[in-house]
Image (cartoon, rainbow, N blue to C red; front, side, top):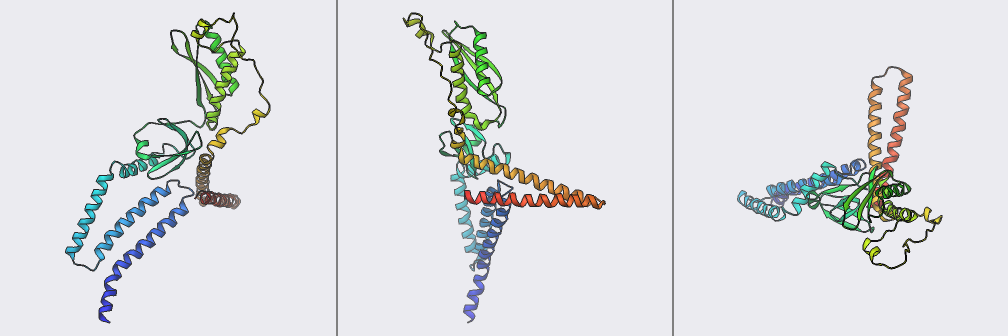
Length: 350
């Protein structure tokens, strides 16, 4: 019986360490599950804390083992060698992505739903994690990009409003410059762009390169507007009897002054009612971006409620107190509904 008692006593501390670790991990998960509706970086912080808890628990477990100090020292030395080797081998990959992920998220360079371009990859941000981000590309497929790659390459973030849309076209020297600039500005206005302007980017041996720019109010229609701008430029030039052909082609043909301009056909009514392709291409990224906006609105409402509660403490007028209490109650109800809606959306994504 005494021998059994000694065995149970010797394993009490290791079992206690394991139980404490499980309870702390559950508490960590519960806390961040409650907070994730207002903190989009909660998963990264939660996983970092969980990693540190596990590391500390392993050390505590080794120290609590019923063995002599010399053996404990050997075990700890072996563990240190493994950790050092792991850090050395993964310093350019895992650890680099971890540090880059913490840096990118702390800088808040971009958020879910934002339109970004990294080298030849362009799309909307779907999800950010501690090691990588996932974006939805122009073809509606998904690509995962390591955080280390993002930290070492320039990231172009498209503005949500007043972003510039542009396209280039080369025309011969036989067409007056002022006429071309006027036509291109009309095409930009017909596309729905504001404050159009034209750059002459190149004077070639046989042609001039014009680049038309305009400001787009809503960047969620970036790709379809770029396509529409090309279409409007082509229609406007043909409508003004300006040929879009290379000068070499003009010099070699024998067509008796025939012009190569297609006949104009008006747009059908149905074509104007089509769903923008971005709504179909970036469906998941749009949902992720909308969730971020709801979290921002929730944070704003919580701040407003806190301001009202602080103002309430300094009031002595009963009528004013009643009005403030009513506003606070309304804010609390609204906050509760928003939180439930956010949790529902998160559960649907998971």
